Amino acid sequence: MKAKPKVTRKRTSRKRTKAFTGAQALLVFPFGEDQKATLDLMRRFSAGVRYAYNRLLEGESREELKRQDGPLCAFFRLNTRYADDAILKAQALLDSARERGEDPRKVVFGGRKLFETLKRGHLSGKPLKELKREWKEKRQGLLYSRGDKTKGGNLNLRLLVKDGTLGLRINLGDGSYAQALIQTKHPNLNALLKVFPWRGSNQRVYASLPYNVELSLKDGKVYATFTWEEEPAPLVATKENGVLGIDINADPYHLALALVGPDGNLKHHLTLSLEPVDRAPNKGAKELFLWKIAHEVVSLALEHGVAIATERLKHLRKSRRGDGSGRAFRRKQHRFAYASLLRKVHALARRKGVQVVEVNPQDTSTIGMLKYAPQLSLSKDVAAAYVIGRRALGFAEKLPRGYGKLLQDKSFRDHVQGFYASRVQELRAKRSAEPNRYLRRKLSQKLERAKRHLSLLSSLQGSPGSQREVTDGRNSPGVNPWRVRSCQELCVRVCVRGAYRS
Image (cartoon, rainbow, N blue to C red):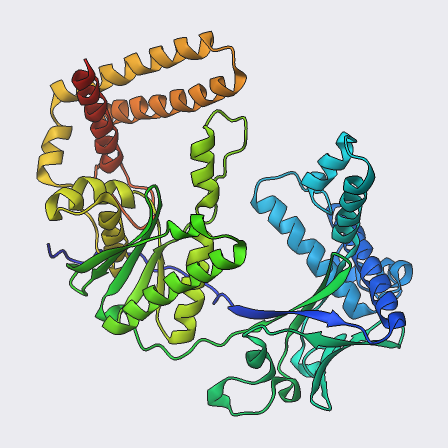
């Protein structure tokens, strides 16, 4: 099982990603005038964000927009700090739309779903009134201020402790202030008020550490979200002692864990069910269970003194109704709390001093299914977690000799090519005869998948390049034998299933 670590190219060091934590609270205004002035400020700030977004689309610069005599300060009566924060929010929304591949000109402030519902005009009376109120709050209920250490934490939205009561002083932008009381039982409140234990016991407010504040409007009430940068604890568990590979699976819904030693061998494995997430009565209970799972994972890593290895996935596709994928499949996709659980594991690991290693997810499931599942009598999910752990340690995966010989077997390769060629013809005929456009879309997806498999097999037969696979994310110089073997395995399964049924 031992293998030599692969030689990797040197890469430029990436900028350290900042980790933030936060706390939420309800704002209670002792005076109605203060609440009215705050709501007006939130309305003007939200309008400023929309204005800044459109100007950024037109190519105007941040410096031009945030000037004291610029449009944001003059038209919306914002000070320069509020104006700069409005531009920051607009730029973040613009970058997000571009990263998702969406047209930035079609962004709907307030939510497209609410907008489309209002456009239908099918509601009346109280439901319509509630919908309009929600739409108005989404579009006009935002206020944001970044923290600044040089300005005593946060200049525009400042936390103050007076007579044992925690309050928020809101700069209205014209030299006047509104006062609100903080009402919350959030567990992170103490972390907000105090600096971290190894720095002393002074209060965060008095220590002038920066914290960001965002106000939002919901059901007529103003809520505040406080966020601040969380300093990671000193590392006590690193990959020098091994890693704990994690693979999250939607069907069956569970977490597969594989403890990998520094030599690359499997030491222990287990699975944790995530089915209780589906049975959670509300979002809070779901979040509580996911945090419980995250604590179990990090505790296991601390017990063995190893790092945590996870896949690096940016986007997970979510199907929509009418795409032909089926209600059961869409439900599995939408319940899949992959990103949420990984964020909790990463955040908790930073607090506990456990190193986190993210690896390229390419072919981890395929390698685990074809190589380690039969060799070690593992499930495909645990085998995938094992591959993730080995990849985090820097080990390369070689194709077993038996698979290599099978790839060179001309008769078997011709049989597989014939299978996929007939499969392409069959799917084309079904798509042409299918009257339902959504089912046609699903058949088109299957057809494209079969074409890719056929093209992959053809390139294997005619490619003179190397078949060595690289697992760190770079393109290999020849054909990917793992994927070729995977589509051959699929062909064998389909043929065997068909023979069994006949």
